[in-house]
Amino acid sequence: MDHTTAILLELFIIFVAAQVGGALARLVRLPSVVGEIVAGCVIGPSVLGWITPSEPLEVLSEIGVVLLLFAVGLETRLEDLKRVGGSAFAVGVLGVIIPFACGTFWAHSIGPDWPRSLFIAAAFVATSAGITARVLKQMGALQRTESRVILGAAVIDDILAMLLLGVVVAIQAGGSLRVGRLLAVLAEAVGFVLVVGWVGTRVMRRGSKWLDRAHDPLAPLLLVLAMCLGLAWLSTRFGLAAIIGAFLAGMIASETRQREHLEEQTRPLLALMTPFFFVLTGAKVELAQLANGAALGLLLAATVLALLTKLAGGWLGALRLGVRPALTVGVGMIPRGEVGIVVAALGLSAAVFDERIYAVIIAMSLLTSVIAPPFLAWLLKAREPEPEAGISKPM
Image (tube, rainbow, N blue to C red; front, side):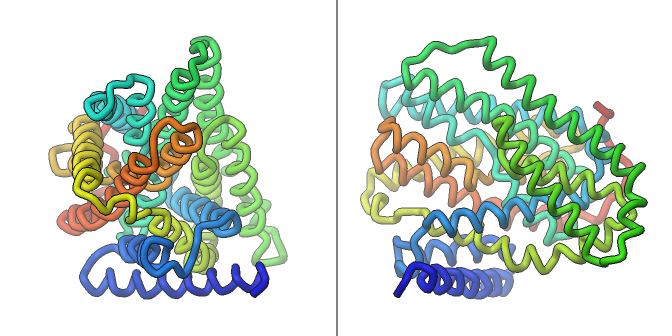
């Protein structure tokens, strides 16, 4: 079987497995994302071995999550985020400090090496916006205050996690920490988000009439998708995740009069592309490395720590919204997903830790991504839809 044929077969297997897993999850009243991640674990190398994560599949996975965050941005306006700016900032900051501090001391307790401990703790920090966004979108809850706080905090979370990872990599490598350079990187990242979000939305408000004049009904979609890919690439040049640029592109496009039409046109793209991200997330877990009591004990401790620290950071940061909304925000910030996987891959390639710790971090990221969505869906269902008015003060 040649390479192209093999890739096509894997794409077929992934897509079908995602549909089956999602359908089974919905039968037991779980979000479909849970079924897709578990399906990936089953068809991946650890169980059936039908697919193996590879560069072509990773590219499709990245495109899928970029499109997902673009679609989420389409349902989010800048003015909505401003209303919850204070809560989002508090959630983002506390959601980094608490998991990193607790993760450092836990890692140091299993191996007295501070640079190594800091590296392991970095895997506990950043939230996977893609997984939470998928649940919020499927629940039709993107207009709720809690959802806006989660999305705003995810942007702040990504900036801080990026800086933190740069610090721990420098410490592990034995290099000097250049505070000036770190501050410059922070300024660039924050400036990128603010300039693109603020300027882009205003330009789109004034220029959206150009899209109305297009003779081709697909022209508006093609233009905003080009903007999505361009900003996704540009965000990586500023050290941020591609999904941040995609989210900003969607938020800019939400200012057009074509917003609802664009949402309708993107649905087939999401149905085709997003399953690849979630199935690949599940396929990356290596169960063989966890086939002993010691490894399972580490996994249990890491998962509990990851759940409680992120929940605490989100809950405390959003407490001004009320106890139950704050709990919803805390649960929404729990999934680590691809972020923890990236940190684990960097640590293994740099020989910071062995394959057992790598497997524990990967499995922890997967478990937080599977555990959080059902609770988030339950919390969202348990509340009646709220009015549009924001609760916290503007930024």
